[in-house]
Image 1 (tube, helix red, strand yellow):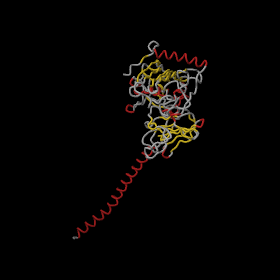
Image 2 (tube, one colour):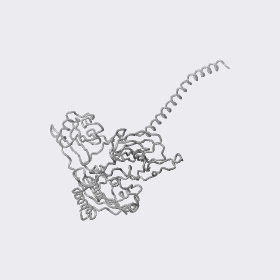
Image 3 (cartoon, helix red, strand yellow):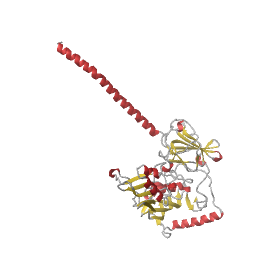
Image 4 (cartoon, helix red, strand yellow):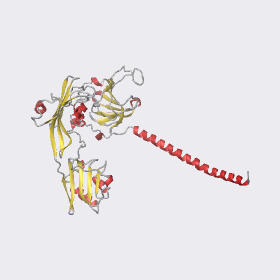
Amino acid sequence: MSQHKLILSMSMGRKKRKIWPWIVGGIAIVIAVICVYALSSDDTNNIQTESHPIDINDLGMQEWEHLSELTRQSMDNDIETELPMPSPENANPFLINGKITRNQTLFVALKNHGLDINDIHQVIDSMQEVVDFKKTKPGDRYEVHLDVDRRIIKFIYEISPEDISISERNGNEYVAHKVDVHKRTERKFVSGEVTSSLYQSFVALGESGELASHFMQLFKYDINFGTDSQRGDTFSVLVDRITLNGAFYRYGRVWAATYSSGARAKTLEAYYFDSNDEFAGYYNASGQALKRTFLKNPVVGCPVSSPFNPRRMHPILKRIRPHNGIDWACPTGTPVMAFADGIVTYANWKGGNGNLLVIEHAHGYTSLYAHLHGFGIGIKKGTHVRQGQIVATVGNTGISTGPHLHFGVKVNGKYVDPATINSSYSISLTGNKLHAFNQKKDALIAAMTNPKKNGQTESASNE
């Protein structure tokens, strides 16, 4: 080999040795990045599958006997007085839109926008007569109009589309007033026939599924609409319907409701008794409160997938194993209600039961809820709960073939079939109370029997 070639070969060898560490280092970095990404992905998946607290206010399910109206719902049509949401694409330097967040005061919310402190104080002071800021809550919306010096010209505060207040600058002071919203309450009679499900039958009549849910809540002590509802069953309801500026806003009070069940060969009835004391609530035709000592079902609208059976063949373990409860097949996230008033004695993971909730009740009763997705906010050992309170959501945790609720009941430490528990009426009206209720009931029946004569709006046929 010539001297020239030898020198060239040695030079190339040195270059390769210099490049090789960089290549190895680069590969190592790439591998490290991939590993970090994989680990972070696994962490994310783990977080998603963990049980998280549930904001009970977001579930949309209430203990209806204790409420005078249905929960607010968003409107299908815009209302002129409703505040517009901010538009990032067309940010206006003279307009601020926002919402009150958790644990935040209005003063702090406005201060965070860098507004003049004196203006903020004056605006809030001016609105004290028209807004009870002690009742404000997260989610309340506000709108601020500014001048070129970022001084407040007009401030709008919306608690709801029916409760809006405005404060405007007038010289060196601010003057506040309530927005005149044209609110109208119309009592409407709705009736129909079950063709597929009760929920779909309400929707087919042009009503919201929210009304169907409320209707099912009324009779939750007497019937399981998931299993007992049949094609051809009939229903009717007398309900207040509220509009704002001519557009439907929400439902108000349900005054009366009936359901004729083919499976039970009888008609269920509910009438609201607007007494000014602890007797206010829903009663059947005999003056017995619809509320009972125990709930018939801890979930609404779900079919039974497995009944109480001490000799059941376990679907996964493939051996005879007592099924000490009832399984309801429900979608993940379905609200679970407390069987009765009581104290939580367990709310945690429990092996094959997955997330397990145990509640102790009076007279030796204990209720158990297994395979839960998660627990309600504040639900932990020692928490006092009331009957019908949302305490958890249905899940698919532990040894489970799919999303469902396993519900068990013990009496003095021994499992019993929840379906056989006799739940007595919590209140039965007597004397003057019963007489007053019967008068109210007769008026409501007349309104449902002749809706047009009594100024009601009759629903269309469910065909």
